[in-house]
Image 1: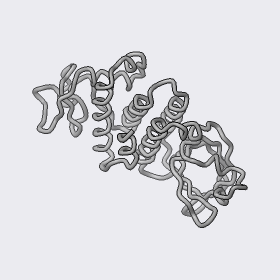
Image 2 (image 1 turned 60 degrees about the horizontal axis):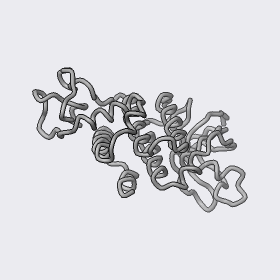
Image 3 (image 1 turned 90 degrees about the vertical axis):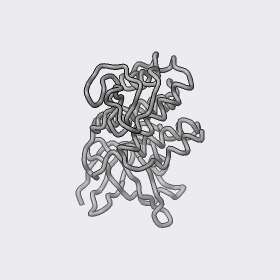
Amino acid sequence: MPVYRDEGVVLRTMPLGEADRIVTLFTRRNGRVRAVAKGVRRTSSRFGARLEPAMYVDLQLHQGRSLDTVTQADLLGSYGAVLATDYARHTAAAVMLETAERLTSEEREPALRLFLLLVGGLRTLASGEHPPGLVMDAFLLRALAVSGYGMALDDCARCGEPGPHPSVSVAGGGVVCPRCRPHGAASVSVTAVQLLADLLHGDWAEAEATDVRTRREAAGIVAAYLQWHLERGLRALPHLERA
């Protein structure tokens, strides 16, 4: 079987037998990969702790017919271990990991920009330099954009009329002007739309100056828009909302 090396983020894991684990990885050069990590559930495993969700690792794998096999894992970033100690950051990371997996619809299809966004988002989340909810929403907006589902936040998504506009159409692709507003569009505050724009463009000073109400409104827009384009809900999102 061919052997290859790649770096990747662990998206999720599931037990296999008594000691093994199936690991879903998002790799830099090979996209989403599913692999078996043998013996990692034993206490004597050399790299079991490195193959937990949100860990960033350098990997050696044997390519198989349906599942590859992890033969080596060296730690590049222990983000998962750091995030596991804080509920808000841990649940935000869970949403990010699930979103990354869902946006990579085909296995072994490289998605370098999305991969780099995920690594950068987890690094920022683990550092604690910004509120976890804002980091998560910034990642989701950018991940949607690089995957072809960018949200219009300045000009009307339908006619292109310059904003700001007081309505958002999730199905229509973003903010809409009064003339183009379809049935079911939501009324939104200008400050919430501006927060989304700040998160998309990385203006953290402006984003962190917002109040809790504005952040909650913006987060609701992002969640609705994300789940519309993914066509079903995220398993991790309700846990985040309860936090």
